[in-house]
Image (cartoon, rainbow, N blue to C red; front, side, top):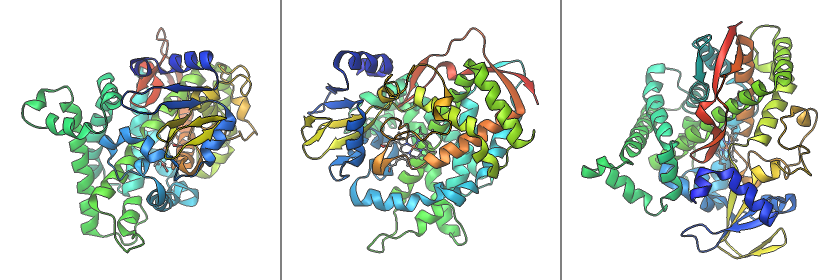
Length: 444
Ligand code: HEM
């Protein structure tokens, strides 16, 4: 566990070099092992597995103490399907595209503040943009005064939770003990514990989210198309509405899953483009041509073929989530191995994306691999797969193209000199070190 925490990728590389396309890892407190697969045939079986047997919600149990047991990430079976059907439409098609201008404006506002000639880490401003976008999308609120308290609490929480201490707590605290530790940390002498500031930030975020929910209940949902209003109006098969606890868990899940991931991928894409000047120049030229020298319009996004390929290649080379897991309810055969009930089958995104037989010269950044090609979902799956594939995939890829096109149109960038970027863990994601420092060399 310590190695998994400190150096996840060298650990995966070592184990796969030693044992091949399937290996088991004993995880403390788990009776059965976690089995990592990097064979496309096994991945295919994981995607096709019966959701009643291949339980993603149960495999995500470590997220319960932060997101709550009603989070879509924690649900399985019928309830998962029902909630997914409800939450998916606003993140697709025309409803998603309606957010295009807001995405572009959030990016343009942020870029306007960047200093010229001074080094700064890009992760934080990226997080600012993606948080702004997701807050407005799911709450349908434009009023900055209402959003500011949520932004403050959430940034404080995610910053602490993705620090070294926060990451260690997330991965090493047994899920069943997490509520007790939280209670202790928020009371009396427990406030002196290292957990206390994280728990306080969580409590503040929780309070602000609940206030926004209560306010919408009072004001009503008529004529509103945002996700909170839709979830407030939804009824289950018995005609029951969602409770405040359920609403809180889902809103928090979308807030957290919907901004850190996208921000880190944006930071990685900028890192790879700046490290590969030929591709940087090609992508910038494409943006200038498509947008005619101005800012990108939402209906031009599909023409950004090279930028899209650069983002896809970034997610191949440096996927921010290294694996997705399914807890097996019954004994199952995967990749020719018999796994007992209780084992966890993991489709290893990182290892499959780095297989030289599927991706020649896998360590080379080459967006050309994706130009005019649709990858096989068992060779490339940065957003997971099957019935659990990322709910925000279309939204995230749309948002990333708009944000990057806006940045590339407005400023010229260079990597900060003398600071080599390494891969580091940020909570459950893998991010560039030091927040990916850059310098703006010119404004356009
Ligand atoms: C680059 C950005 C993102 C990446 C790489 C990413 C990746 C992932 C991965 C790997 C999973 C697990 C899939 C599985 O178990 O098979 C997932 C699930 C999920 N993601 Fe994302 N995600 C991103 C952005 C977003 C955004 C923007 C949202 C919200 C709008 C979002 C919401 C979710 C939700 C709700 C789930 C759970 C789906 C379910 O269990 O049915 N993600 N994501």
